[in-house]
Length: 143
Picture 1 (tube, rainbow, N blue to C red):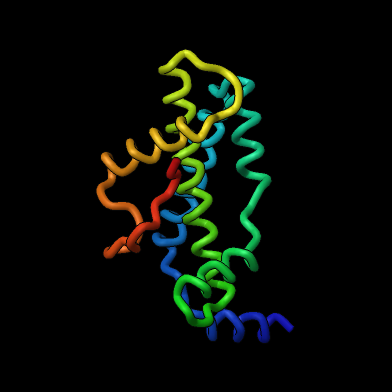
Picture 2: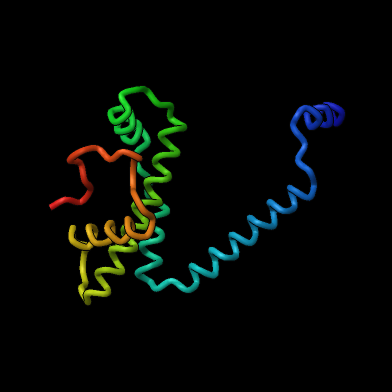
């Protein structure tokens, strides 16, 4: 039985011990950094972060939007990747919108105006958002 286990290990690509150690070290450091970050959250920030972690975009809906946009079929792994990037993008826009709201001294739910300003700020910081050739007449957060 033990010989079979050794044989299976030989079939799998070997990861160098130093690579594995570096990966474990990086994972441990990431967990420590996240713990420090979470310890310094305000109750509101912690609640938003937990909501962010709990929720995901429906993969099937994302896949449908991608397929409608591209006009061709895409696999579920592609939809999952796009959903992940989209979740990060939405999180960044919401955080910027919260900063806009705080800067204006406003409270309560975010308004479309906060989101538009956050998107404008995001575009200024990162350059063009979206495809290399923007679709004519289609803009995000329009009035």
